[in-house]
Structures are given as C-alpha cells and as structure tokens.
Amino acid sequence: MFDRNSALAGAATVILGTIIGGAGVLYYAGSPSRAEPSSLTQTERDSMLAATDGMSETQMAENQMEPPVSQADRNFLDFTTPDLAEAAPGQNLTRHGCVKPEEPTWATNAPPEDAQQVLLLKALYDNSRYENIVQTSSCPCEVEYPSWDEADASYQALVASRGLDEIPVMRDEVSRLVRRNLKASIDICKVWRGR
Image (cartoon, rainbow, N blue to C red):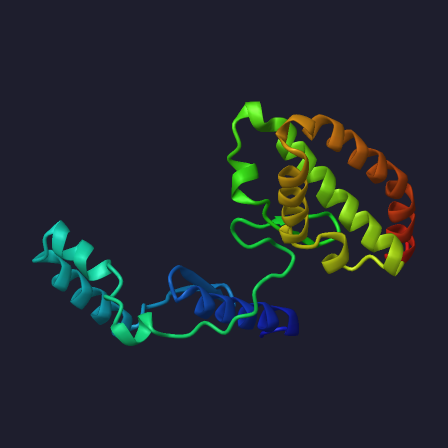
C-alpha cells in the first residue's frame, strides 16, 4: 500500500506544512487535504483588528511610541567600557594611540600677525619633548607628548627677557636644537615601539 519513500515524503510535507503555519495544501499519500489555521491565531487576529478599527492614526502613533524615561533611568550609571581606540570628543590621537595635549588657548586663537610667536612656542615644545626622549631613551606617551605648560613657561620667560623683536632669531636658534635631536628621538621611538 504505502512504500517507505512516500511515507517519508508525506511526513516531511506535514512537518513543513506545520512550520509554515498550516496555510496551504498538504499532500499526503497522494490525497490533498486542506490544513485549517489555528483557531487561537484567528481569534487573536480578530481581536487585534477590532481594537484598531476604532482608533485614529494619532492614537495608533501614540501607542507605538516608547514609554517616557523615568528619573531613575536618567540617573542610571553606565558602566560599559569605553572604546579606547577612539579619541574622546576634542582629543587628538596620534597613530600610535597617544593623546596630544591641547595647545595653549592664546596660541590656538592667535591672529596671523602673531604667527612667529606661535612658531617659537611650537619649537620650544618640540625641543623639550625630543630632549626628554633622548635623555630617557624611552618613548611613552607622557614623554613623547607632554603638557604644553613647560614650553609655555619657557616662551614667556624668553619673551620677557629678550623682547618680541628677537622672536625670529630665537625661533631659528631653537629650531636648530630641534633638528639636532629629531633623528635620535625618532630612532629611539622606533626601537621603543618595537619597529
């Protein structure tokens, strides 16, 4: 009557029909039979349709909105670990992951006619950090990118003792010192980072 292959095919068809939800025609042993949808599902559908018939579009939109946030939710402490590979807003990261400190505000907001003063400050900063790298023979972020406070204090002392007129001459002197330490500091940082 039934062979093994048709019994397996029929069982697979029944399982597949059940998974799909009973919608469609099932064929078992060559005779089609209509699968009835679940009465519970049909009842749920009817109740949902009846509930939405009397609602306007604004009421439906209000029902779909998220519930208001309570004060307890606003005060919730977030203990997720931040992604350390990304800089925080306002921070400038180097390619090695060091955070560059912000320049003094007077240097950032300096007008173009004060460019020589800003260049002297940057030369003093670079000279200080390159000398520190050479002296310590290491290149951690704190040494490679220190605070601008020391360079700013050196700049203020130089300008107070020698005056604004000599800024181009002072910048040239400091730039020579920077060039002298630059190659050695780059080599130390390459070795220190294992490159």
